[in-house]
Amino acid sequence: QLITRHVSGRLKVAPEHCADKVLRIMRKPSWENYLKFRQLFLRINDEAGLKQQLIPYFISSHPGCTKLEMQQLADETKKMRYRPEQVQDFTPTPMTLSTTMFYTGIDPMTGKSVYVPKDAKEKAMQRALLQFAKPENRRLIEEALRIADRTDLIGYGPRCLIRPWRENKNVSKNIKRQRSVSKNKNGAKRRGR
Image (tube, rainbow, N blue to C red; front, side, top):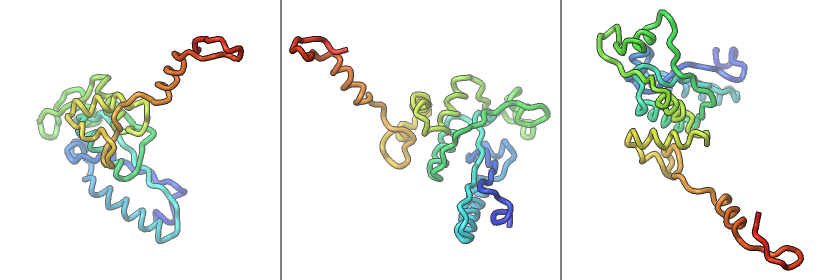
């Protein structure tokens, strides 16, 4: 009933991550729950002849999340053919366990230390990994994948997040054209612009 009568085109949900390690720290259910719900949502839409969208909300740089977990999340979103336009970086807010972990580096429920991404460049890399389809993120993604020793995700295969870097062919042609000597209308030689 929720899907067929109470969704006006898009249903936004907040799985926030896919790595069980990060989800446990967030006190969220397993990624499998989201996948089951997504499958149900798509099936009901198909049966009802609806074309509604399920929009998942994800967060980067949460305590406990490394570039490896963000790469996993990027891989999962790619499998779903979902390309997030907006990604929320973790922002500490008062009175939450996540904020306690952010400032102390300790999970208050277990007493164990928790990795906390605080470096601006790493936060940018985590956000870029999730937004792998944006061309402006390409260099950050490549750097993050090399650091994580996941160069297998750079290439042309279906699991690859980005393609190998290569010089733009059009730019090369334009530079060669500009350097070449050409003739003007009067037949005199002149340098290209």
